[in-house]
Length: 252
Ligand SMILES: [Zn+2]
Image (cartoon, rainbow, N blue to C red; front, side):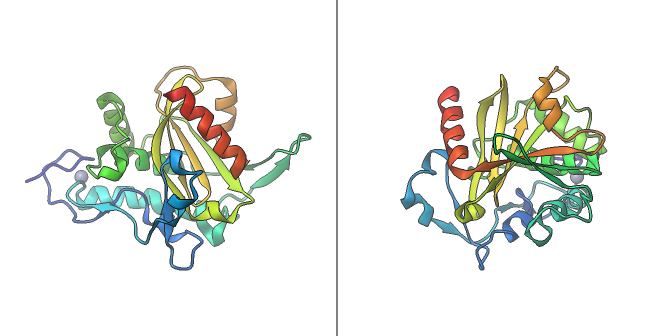
């Protein structure tokens, strides 16, 4: 019998596990849920924007039925927060507030999130990309130590502390095109940490691959907190592309 990659037990494995949650693909704004998958360096090239895909990527023989259920429970919690009526769900994130700074920057805050469920929902995506054999996720390879820690966190439902694998959460505004773009998770060196950045349906997730070390105040301020609040930066797509190119330059 093969080994399930989450519980590490010999079990019958399911034939179809999504690596990126299905709800994310279902929420592309295009009427056919089609989307454009681009690599970060291709983002400025108009020709690459014509390469459309229509369905999500899945893989068989990685998870048993039980573990598939563990992950789908996190998805049932996380997906409606991101996608209810195309916006952040006011019923779950009941205290969503929106702010504009005196320099014209905008951001939102969410409160009353379930820290464990929402954090593990997001971390399960980067863990699945890392264990996946699909070529589309070949650029995501966590070290064996981090992969194992995340496996145990997901399996036991332990989201650990604010300093363990913090995630920064941003939103692309003012550009319809950005709602149809998927940039697969890719490595970016950010704030002295190795991070993986993933862009889908206007959301940008920066996963900081760090455990137990101190993190700077600004990161601690913005990431999802055990109290259930999180800060969401809003970016203009053009500014975001500039930032992306800068980060890419630092990384190379
Ligand atoms: Zn399992």
